[in-house]
Image 1 (cartoon, rainbow, N blue to C red):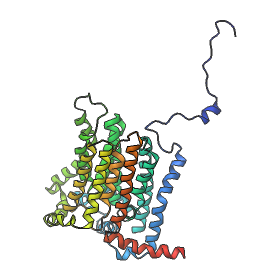
Image 2: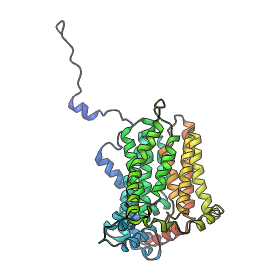
Image 3: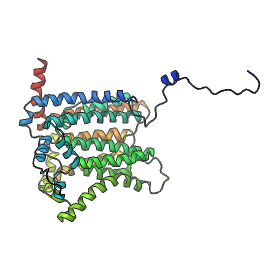
Image 4: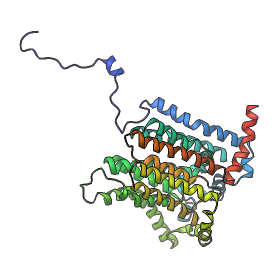
Length: 397
């Protein structure tokens, strides 16, 4: 080499660049390859598609009064030739109502749609845990606790509106965490949109959004030195929902003289439901509900994140409030368990060290026990499983 010659920086060959992948960052999709990502979503959706197929062959459609059946009955009463403000009130919540009206196949079609949504939802939850570097055992147990039980399968295939709201809320909470702890502005705007979609998918979604707004200040901020950051975070999170619902209430007030439109009908019987609430916790159904909340508290204590206790408590209170004021349709089951598990996945930070990992895994295993115990304690879920078992039994023989 001649004197004074400059060295040419090494540049990997095309072949090397194809083999050597850049280090994963916390915002990377999982799996990175879109083909594998969609294959994973299909794999997650497959068990619930099988349940939807079994339900289509069983007598469940005629013997059980599930939320999907009530949704279809509500859609059948809507006059689709109208376009006035009263009609807007009739289709509320609009997202799930319009989707259900457009999906063919009745309850089977809604069950298939719910299964497909579940595939995408579970892939996104797995992606969140990979991004936050959860231990592989924790990831596996939490995914099994959430998705491998009759409560989740029933909600996916028989409660389309609630599952849409739960899915959007779970993804929104995860993005809120990214927003307030990692400083991701994109996640903040996405969280606001997810919560708006939750409110427009399920009547309980409105309560979820209020809960998320109340819980946001208790999360640890990634940039504590910025004055007014908490208020700005809450504003970004709730603005899309406030704008959408505010517009609907304003139109109702202008044209009907009542900002709630026909929504006031659903709060009838609130006093009776509130009086009956203490009886709920005097029976196993209430015990399993409390066990779900206590599990979320335990995980929060293990990872030293006390703010998550406040968040999970607010969510639990939101579920009870939704039931009392009549936002939950008859036949609803599993909402509290699913929400508490989502809180554990989306809010609890990862801690290094085997002791916290083992303790979190133990509590996650308890979530599996709670899920199956709750399933066998809910009459609607038992009747639903009893209707499906003959179909699966016949297929094996």
